Amino acid sequence: QVQLVESGGGLVQAGGSLRLSCAASGTIFSINAMSWHRQAPGKQRELVARISSGGSGGSTIYADSVKGRFTISRDNAKNTVYLQMDSLKPDDTAVYYCAADIRISILRTPYEYWGQGTQVTVSS
Image (cartoon, rainbow, N blue to C red; front, side):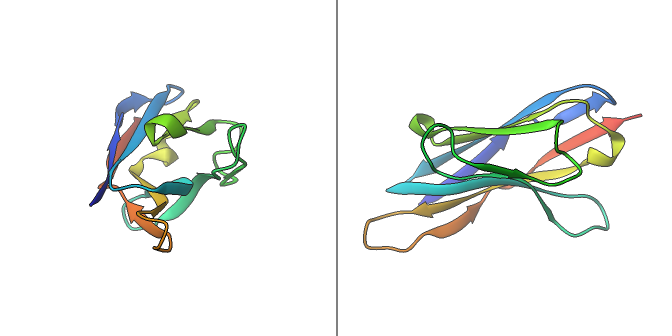
């Protein structure tokens, strides 16, 4: 019914940039908050950034480790969330997942859907 598909991952040198995209498709009535998470080998999944559904771009929060380097944004017309990652560090290496609180009809409560993940590798 609902799919989230990430793209944009890859291999980059330290100091470089990548832009991740995540597009939601399927039966969608509305999308509330959208977010990016990451999981490095042997570590727990952590929140990277989150953006609300408010007008004028929505409010955002970031993990302390990425503040000033990553920027989350969304295009509501395209049901898409982005993560611009600059000044990348080897510690940013992880599988990155997007998530979205989606309501599939006015009668249903929002449910959090997840993408399949995209690998980001930062070499030193």
